[in-house]
Image (cartoon, rainbow over all chains, first blue to last red; front, side, top):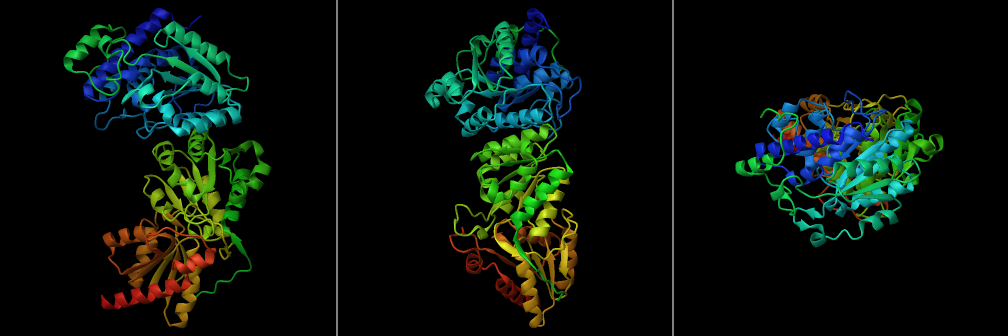
Length: 285
Length: 320
């Protein structure tokens, strides 16, 4: 059972993919691969799963919070925030340009609504999310804290400090998600630095682990996240291993790490946009 | 020379512990985090009073800084506690991104700063922390001089909105700051008005500056002594007013001469009032093991070194 029809959510996904492609093309920089791969996740969170207030306030008391630890996939984050009503959709056109609130990596520094901490230097978001979850417990606020990390990001040691802490302190209002696409800048994670058996690693660290095998299928993502939420409140932090495909939704960007951090040309953009029809109206460039 | 007396000596870290407890009583949003050094940071009384507002992080300082940043998002005022070395250099990027750049209301309480950690040696001493922290935009850097001032500084830090680096130490030093002296962040404390030379001291070197002032008086030198407890923002008005009067300055700190109080003063004066200046600071080296007072003597961080620096700077003042 979902708030929106799957059809409507899929329409949002298509529009967000267009936003990502146009934003990255517009400034000829940024990270389309991971952004496209996490589109279903962010749309599911913001349009379906999360309980959010109408207006943004930094403290987020009484509402669900989301932290993006792998800040380089800012295009998908910005698009979903704008499409959720946090700031004007046309502001997406300023992405990575001078004097923009949409910095290359997300920041609170320019006061962009929807952002609660800067991210980009990897490995820090899980700790921040734990702190926010800890504050919710102190404040007797029973909403949840979500955090997304990249799988390559798990190579950062701080993640495992945080993993140990969350289990020890029974952070059961915390749902962490790993974008398990198996790729990072220099190639496959298995070639760069193997992550090993991730489900068993997180279980061994004392987490409840849920795998979503089809992370680019909106129904699977929503039912997996509902399962994750149903697993909260029993003394264990929850880890969602979300199997995605970098570059999903654009045929020539899929199946390679090549599109981690490069922008499409004019010709490539039009090919990519043809595969993702305009559904909600493009932002004005 | 104004007479400074003291009846007791205490460590500044105990001033922090007392201040933290009081801050916790004043504001229920004050919380504390520690990376396996509760006793060293004197957090026991806070933990006893507010067990649910204390977070034992374990030996994981990077995680501690991130959790502190996250706690502010629920309106909390977190104080992180570990040695100065592990509060700064070890976690610089976490402080930079999650706290300073994110403008989070975190108070980084750093004990065992400088050489006076003593026997543990250079791996645990740090002489670069003031420089590291003052370079971060928006970071307030405070280095109080004794128990009473550290307690007051802790309370002021809790009330201040924005990230604060609060630096204090391990050794027992004379308590001479009046218990009721208000701590105003960024406002220097005039300890002794004088005309011949300005001595700007911070932290443990403030008491040494007072002793140096007494010695200088016997030599007929009338020193103006100012306690610069806040290195950033620097009390520029206090420095400029004093230096305009005296025409020369000595800075004294338990820190590397690169990046500390001396450099902040030099930068200000170079731009606004070029003035002969001498540094009492560690001469760009690491520390080493030894009893704290012996280390301070060996590295030239004491009253004698301040007197010698004053004599040097007075010669340069005459020459110009």
